[in-house]
Length: 472
Ligand code: HEM
Ligand SMILES: *[C@@H]1O[C@H](CO)[C@@H](O)[C@H](O)[C@H]1NC(C)=O
Image (cartoon, rainbow, N blue to C red; front, side):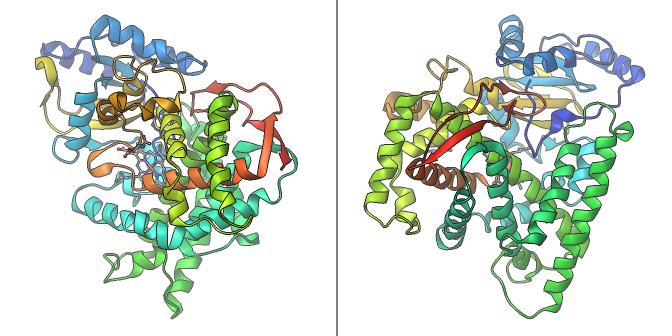
């Protein structure tokens, strides 16, 4: 299995190991003869250590490869304190994602819910989830991006890049950009001292997601909980002020308060939780994808050259500082190949965790017992040579050959699927595209030092990808 990602930081779980539970589940698994084949590993820890050690290397694939070749694409394992059915199969993944709320429900451990807050979208279920998912969509769909957000994305990317000279730690810069953007999108604040301070506290919250086993005893986790309180307080003040004022803004906060727009009727606490979780969802994911796109491009000079050509072409039609328009975004075909290919090979969210709400029959006559954890691995599908030729190589041109495109696109699910499909998908694509546009038209760069990919506890490069930039 895989781990990772800001939202799901599911891996980083903090795990209530218990022998009795383990033995109980072993017994259950014997009664269900048609459980997918597999190995539950050692008591308590199952196969967690194997997973972690695989994901701390540059090549985590063997963890899945070994099990798929032994047992097939759906197998049983024991990870992070629970027996888990692991799916590396595209049809089973689709089935799991589409049956959200009917056969499966999202399932996150307590340590994560404490940090996210009870009222985050990821933890909501049923009708409330439906309503809030569509409210979120209505604040990040293509029309909103085209008419409102694109200008801010372009402006904030430029504002940040204007300060770049010499050595730049790309991941840090990308984080600043995505944080500022999300704050702007949520509550219309431009970067200022207040947002700077908020970001500092907020980074402590994020660190709490990476505490491995027992959070209650971990200083990082306690500090994260404290920081979360401070961030929540700061956001509450904004909510209170907004309720008092008469000015009508067009942002997520306004939508949450607006009776007609599908929001309304929420307490301040609910609104704050919801916003805080959105901040978590959009920030680490998008900044990581920005950093890794640059890494892959740097290591694939031919792709970088073609990308530059595309963006210089767009710039040639406009003044140097003129803002990007929606039509410009729509005329970046190769960039979209680079975006998709980066999403495919990096698998920022390597998969999603669910719990079976009832006994569920899946392919080959196997049954997932009620109450069991399920992990739908998006990564395993994206990295499978049967579905993507030479799957483990960054090759943006693969998406141009129509033979691969149509069938592979069905297998390409970096944003999940079904009722919980990422509502920020389009926004993330636009942010990455604009970031690349401004980067390649304004700078040349080279890596400042050797840096390598790791996949645990999240996908990232070890040194946050320092580069030396030169303004063109
Ligand atoms: C490259 C960037 C991103 C990737 C790869 C990504 C991926 C995903 C995936 C796979 C899920 C599904 C989780 C599940 O089914 O359990 C998800 C959910 C979610 N994402 Fe993203 N995401 C990205 C960026 C963003 C951004 C920019 C936002 C902010 C608007 C966002 C907001 C959310 C929210 C709120 C959910 C929960 C949806 C729900 O449970 O209904 N994501 N994301
Ligand atoms: C990129 O992926 C999206 C699906 O997420 C798809 O609709 C689009 O056609 C793809 N674009 C390219 C150029 O492959």
